[in-house]
Amino acid sequence: MLNLFIRNIGKFFAIAIALLLPVIASAEQMQKLGNWDVHYLAFPSTFLTAKVARNYDLQRSNYLGLVNISVLDSKTKAPQALKVTVTARNLLGNIRELEVRKITEQDAIYYLAEVPHRNEETYRFIATIDDGANQQVLKFEQKFYVD
Image (cartoon, rainbow, N blue to C red; front, side, top):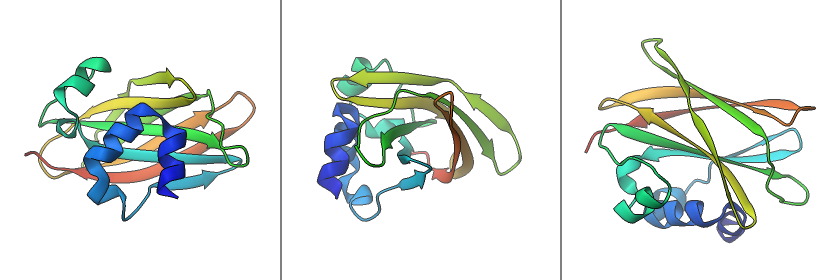
């Protein structure tokens, strides 16, 4: 199942997975929403190499996390071009509307957002996924640490 996940997500996810393999191998983060398989991952930006960060114009910082979302058709496993918005709320109730960037590479489409954080700060993410005819909501939580 992990091989299928890597093949459908593309280069960036493959690199992120290689960096995070011990963590991800035990628990893939995916939710089936309507006709979509929504894969998601939130992790510290310092897990990226400097080269990968430069290639994707991402900032590496101990105080910056990344959210990566990929949406596949449940039947065909084809990547979906959609509108994705992400809101992050910390446990104090502070809300951030994150800027989401769509990345298209060969046969993969994924959506990236950066989120600033403090040590041991937990965010509850709400991602709205919309293809114009169908709208689904993904909710997940991530605790970030400062190295």
